[in-house]
Amino acid sequence: MSNFKAILDLFGMSAADAASYLDVSEPDVLRWCSAEDCPPISVWQKLVELFDSIRFAAEDAAKAADLDHLTATDLNSLTFGPAAAANDRGTPLDRLAGPQRMIAAMATASLARVFV
Image (cartoon, rainbow, N blue to C red; front, side, top):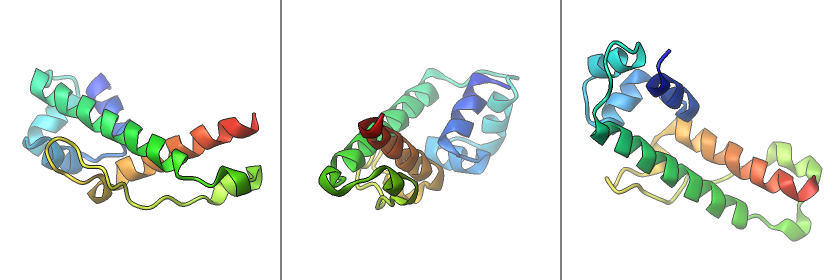
């Protein structure tokens, strides 16, 4: 497995999702996933932008939590609304299910630090 594929897996993105988001063909994505070829630097830059958008959205979601009324038992049932943030390409994160799950997971993990 390629590092490119590992990143897509982390983001919870299918090859079709990635192709659409990255504005490339699905066969290109599949080639990069199998390590037959390497994505161009512009694709890596878009992945970095997406990661940063996810990270900032997770931080914002965690900051918005009501810490005065949060208990450790709440962590497993917290819900976070769709990320309002958009990346530089103008693609709202709320249209990408995998990154939304990653935002929720990162925000929950950040909030768990309060209890450890």
